[in-house]
Amino acid sequence: MGRTWRFIFLINIPICVIAILCSFRQLEESTMNTRKTFDIWGVLVLSAGLFLITYALTASEEKGMDLQNGIMMTVSGEY
Image (cartoon, rainbow, N blue to C red):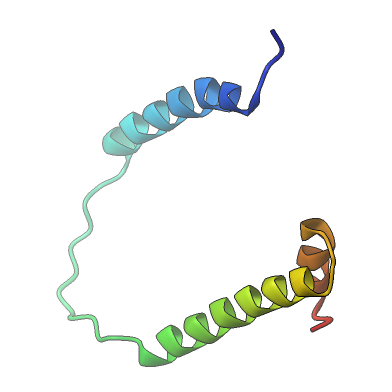
């Protein structure tokens, strides 16, 4: 029986558990006295970026491209 994609969980899960346990030992809790405000410009830029990525990948599928070419076209800004 060959290895399938599920095999990756046998590697990732122990690494994540070790990283989480180490982070509890090494990181200190940060305390901030200032109040954070809602970043409306960040939300707008993120929303626009996610929309454009989704649109580009959908449009590439409608044009008959495979996923790999669609991703490359999106990253390179061809749309």
